[in-house]
Amino acid sequence: MTVGRRAALERAGLVHPNADLVTAALFDGTNPFFLADDKVQVKYEMLRASLVEGMSVTEAAAAHGYSRAAFYLVAGSFSERGMAGLVDERRGRRGPLKLTPDIVAFLSGADRALSGADLGAEVSRRFGVTLHQRTIERARRR
Image (tube, rainbow, N blue to C red; front, side, top):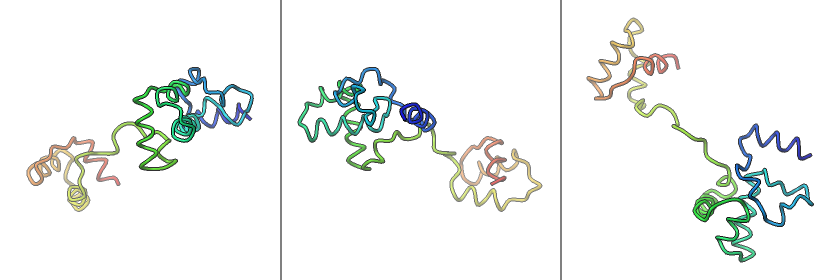
């Protein structure tokens, strides 16, 4: 069971980066349900150890392979979003920053004969935003 679970965690990007630092008794390997490689489970048990069992934040964080600062980030995220808050958010930008709905509508309605460079100049003039030619071309394909 552990091998398949570990593979699933890897595919989902949910492997605890410091599983070797987890020293909490639940993760001692005697019960296969508790897997130190399972980042979400370890975060949950870290919060439970502190908030339910009364372990200090410093002790709970260290026993689960996290820092005090990370504990507070996890606790805040859990407080805001529940269990979903224990899953790391996707890293990086969330799409184009400059493509507002108005600009997308303008590009969609623009004459197909105009080049990306021509449209870029028009977007700059109308909206005061400089877009790369490739950004414009990708937006027009959508």
